Image: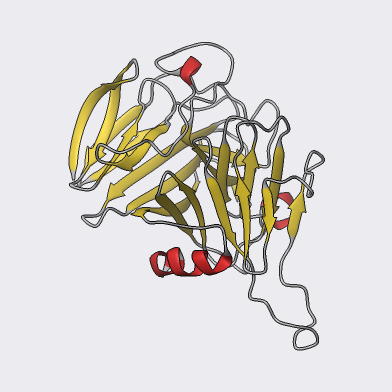
Length: 297
């Protein structure tokens, strides 16, 4: 793995990790945001908000794009703390740590990254309580994908009635969710959410994903997130560990860790593993079976 400091889209102190296959770029002037992820000399699969690129400072929260770490449940002031100031970084033992300043609520965020020779990226997300009171939160990892990305979520195994009679998992809706929206494909094996730049409304769904993966597909490249499911854990938003939000500019693949009471001086960790694959992928469930599952396994 190669480590270097570069100027990227106006930010002078970005960190670039790469091998002979892929590259990842993270900001340190703000964030942290993992602002780029893709194949060498290939497209950035992550959204870049043009009006935010290279900007620093300010009192309002900015999307920037890329991948970020939040904490759930969502709250108007605590969640949208403006992370517009520099973050510390450490590179040691082939691991990169991005450490944010302590937020007003007392939480300090950290993302630790490492890259394997095969191109898999492991991200350990840390929420550390630097305050004087305990606080109940869940790690919330949001990856902002570029326009026209199709998100793929696995369904629970189909079992016909009456072979199994108990509920399989929760599917959670927001007040602004319209299940008849054409961006949703409700399949037997998969739920798909297609980002559409011409759409004028916002949509969001959440679910308890026991299959431990979610994917995004755009421009002939498949992005896979893998993450753990804990059957004993309590998850936010009526039991969601996976959520998808989309509007006219983005689609977010969001994963959530369990709710934890973090005592002062203590922390919680949450891990994702990313991979990229060049492949053709249709919208049919058979195409997804053939084009996605081999990489998930």
